[in-house]
Structure formats: structure tokens, C-alpha cells
Length: 327
Image (tube, rainbow, N blue to C red; front, side):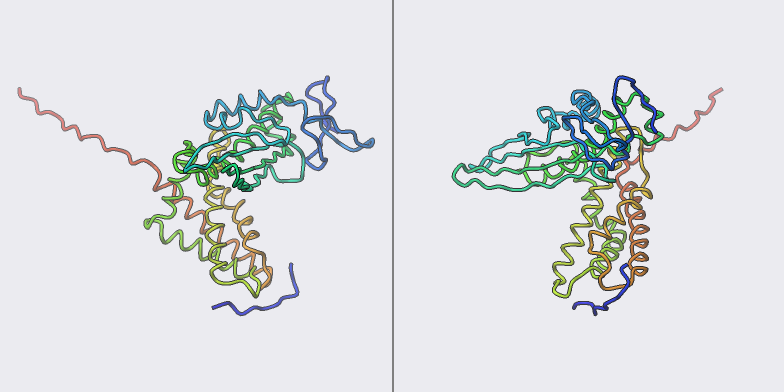
């Protein structure tokens, strides 16, 4: 049964690390090309992103994940598609093409465009195409500057960190879409364990609380023609999105020495989940915000429970009893 809709009116100057580089602070607001310098009118800040070395970025990633390095080994960061995986199954050839582009485009660190599927019946070939956009707008963040004073090193480190996170999404998608056994990297297998734990009966209470909050938010953003089944599928999709982001964010943080706790991850992605659910078409903005906060609290509880259940049990050492003195 659909909820009663209620229409509402309320909707609510930079130091240079290297004197040989022509660099100014862009703060992520000026578009730039990853392959060439950009020319702007006087006074407009810009940064030539071509100063970073692809080999340097890939080397940083290789130290942290061999599987991910193999994925990116033959991919240039020029926005063009390169084949990264091709397997045969049941008479069909399944191929995966990946493109990576580095540019400034606002305040999102990175975006993964999930695969577009193209079926070539005559060739019995299925091609999936994914695009990763990397946005190093945090280049002038104080902690990062203090860690890497040389701007080239800092840029390569930041690109590697963002790309690592986005590639986790790609590798999870590879494992889910490709025929069984062909996309099962260590990263995919680790995430699958997280997913299994989150959906286990042991965490039934925590899971249902998160999904209940997501359901309310989906209803708040629903249209009159939305069926309950569609809303439920949206809830399940956003629920897996949240688990995906928990794993990707914390895996990246651990690999690059900047771990994030469950409270910070839940705070960041609960808002995104609330927006993905559809907004506040059916309720006042303050009601929507209250439910978003409840989702955040429920997420922290769920994430803590996942970590607790995933932690390997410590084996108890046998108790050593003092020997009696025979004398």
C-alpha cells in the first residue's frame, strides 16, 4: 500500500614547490586536461595536470595491490578505452574496457561510471565499458602539502589514492558481472565476505534498521506512480552501495595510511544515500533531515557489527599450571 502523499511548499596567492613548474592553486574549480596545459585569461587560477607521471601513479598502486596494478597496467590516463579483461564462457567472449581521465570538475574526488553493456551477436561478444574520472581538487589540502612539499609527488600520490578507491568499485563490478571464476580478485572476494556478513542472520536487527530508514527515505522521495516493489529494489541497491563504500573507503584509507572510522564513513555516505533515495518530495525538509540522521546512527551500528563479526577470533592459549615442588 502506498503512503499518503503530502505536497509541501518548502524544499527545501600560492607557494610553488618547484620553480620550474607554472602552477597556481586551482581549488578544483577550473577545468583542466590531463594531457596538455590549459590557457586561461589573466587572473584565472589553473594547474597543468600533465606534470604527473603515469608510471609514478601506477608504481604507488602496485605497492598496495598487485591485482589492481594488473588492471591498470596497460591503461593510459587519457580518457580513451583500453581492454583490461577478456574471457571466454559458454561460446561467448566477455570483454571489459576501462578508461581513466584526470581533470578538475568540482568537489567530488572521483566518479566511476558503471559499465555500459554492448552485445555483438554476430561476433558472439559482450563488451562492458567503464569510465573512471579522477579529480585531485584536494591538492592544496594542508595535511597533504605538509606530507608532500613537491607538487609532482603530491599530485601523483593523490591521483593514486583516488584511483585506488575507484578501481575497487570496478573490481567488485568485474567480479559480479563476469562469468564465475574470471573476476574473482582478492578485493572482490574480501568484499563478498563483507556482504555476506552484513546479510547474515546474526546482523538481522542492524540490517533491518538500516533498510527501514532507507525505506522511509525512498518513500519520502517517491513519485505517485512508484510501485512498492520498485521502492524495495531501490532500498536494496542503496544498501549495497553503502556497504561498497564502507569497504572501498576503509580499504583505501588503510592502504594509504589515512584510515577512516565507521562514524566518518557513515556520516559521509548516509547523506549520499538519502539523496539517492530521491529527496523529500513527500515531506518537509526537516523531517527528511531527521530521518537522514537516524540512518547515519543505524549505519554506525551496522558497520561496527560487521567489523566485530569479521574480526578473527583469538585462540585462547592453554592454561599453564604451576608445577608442585617435589622436594
